[in-house]
Length: 285
Image (cartoon, rainbow, N blue to C red; front, side):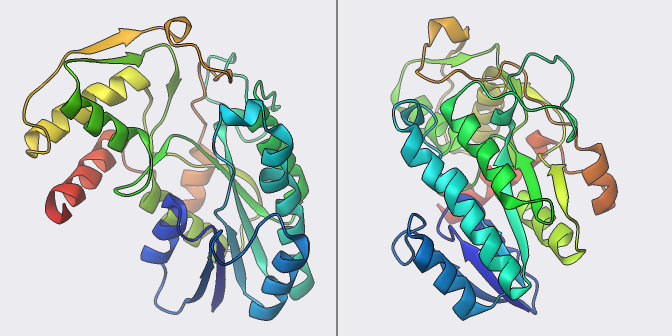
């Protein structure tokens, strides 16, 4: 089984490579070997590899920067997705594209089902919605949220650094979502792709939390594993107290029930996967 991963050096790209089935012959590209803004290069790459499955794990993820660079974000999150989808279609590959909870405005108050009407309130969200539309109905589109891994830039690693450097940390407590461990997401994508699933689906770890809840759990679990020397106060604040250029959805928990049914089991609770991730850091440094 020939597999092409675009965005191979990111958290999800690395997770896909690490959890790949034994029969997967993987070709992986990132910005240093493939310019996702170059439509001709993308098409040529797919035509050359002729994959059975094409995973798009690349994205413009600088949420706040996208407010002033929406055109640049759209090239990566929208236009390039359409190019990859067309190229996959041309060689008969299954196209797997990853989207985000930011396609919703966060005002619903209950978990968003895959069929819920999108209403992005940020440039990042608008460009990711454009990518979903460009992928087409024959693609597998999986929305996720709050992704983290032992490597790369993410909330968990940022909190570990700040908790080691500062006398206290202040964390937003009125944005609710669900953390997602990248290797778990990757395993789900492999299963769904190999089963030939198409359409829009949701996947995160189980449960829900605020960023404040997540930060408190990070400190508790890190202390238990000796990754932090001492506890510092974690102060809950409101979104208004920490203004950023891009609006965030206040409640973006995703309804994963249909995806979990397709996978045959629910994802682990987010705190269980947090323990796994911190255990890896403790073991590997």
